[in-house]
Length: 435
Image (cartoon, rainbow, N blue to C red; front, top):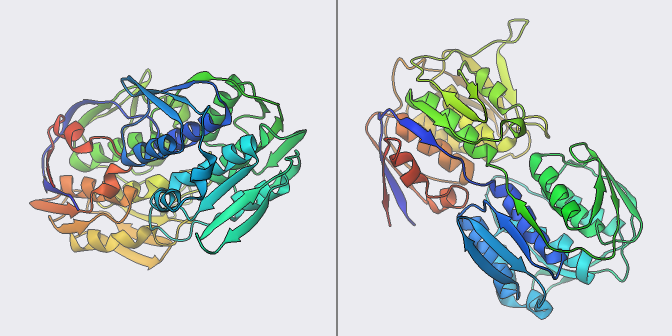
């Protein structure tokens, strides 16, 4: 495992541009399986999870052509369907959460698919029921292959239907959409996820000839078509990176400008950091974070303690709660962090407590953070990154701490953040990668 050696206490200064959105990239790249024509996708982030997905598509027979500058062209006209039942395919899926997103496109176009248990972050239960139940409503049948340890899915015919999702799952919604676009008749998805990632996927599919209405709402209507064609698509900036950089600037007392953030697609994110007392200045499509000597947690209108919780879009994405929790450790005031979706995501706080943070872990879902108000710094420590978002949160904590910190298992961070140490070093950070 590789490690970061971080010398804390450096103020940063300058401009940084967010990468393409990881979660959108995983969805739109798998959507290329829906057509035999070329699909060009721009602003693809050069990160481990996305690169592993692209390599998996290559092994399946997809022609993948790099166009330079984070742009790739895909053509799925000669797929090796038999590869889907191989042990190699199962092994690849077991290390990549995004592999589950191939289910919808394969089933929609070829009426058969194979699903291995996907990998990804160890942040608690991440059930697939929403995917399976929705796709079964469209006419798919699941059987379990004990020998390979995979689900094999067949559908002689896919027919549109009214579907009420049991939860607003982003990947579940994406899979059902990609199954339904080539199904017969009309599919209605209620309680659909409506994150910008889903909106982008729907717009891309419409540009390929799909007929999807209700985009940006939780009620989608999909009129099935016989065939989709090629297109070009540009991925949005990663809003999780934008939030990470806002938190980094506040924690390190730095003056940073975040360029080309697609502000209208950030939703409630700027407001949530403002609740911690962080000044956020919008300059066109850029965000400027001035240097903060202090930032003070707001209270609710009735004077009660501020609570920040994740929620389905347009609520706060759970991917930013780890960063917000770290930022709160240096705020003036107390805040309750409520992670509703994943029961293991807050377990990294023991590492922050070892660094001197004042945090009470109430249960797997809630933590109370008593801010230091920058009166004393966190201490450098030796840590290991448990998942992507906790990893970047620990990196932010280490950059604000006194002394030297070591973070191991940084492959977790590489899964979601492109060349992060170089980009932050260009702003003045002291981060060294040790193979």
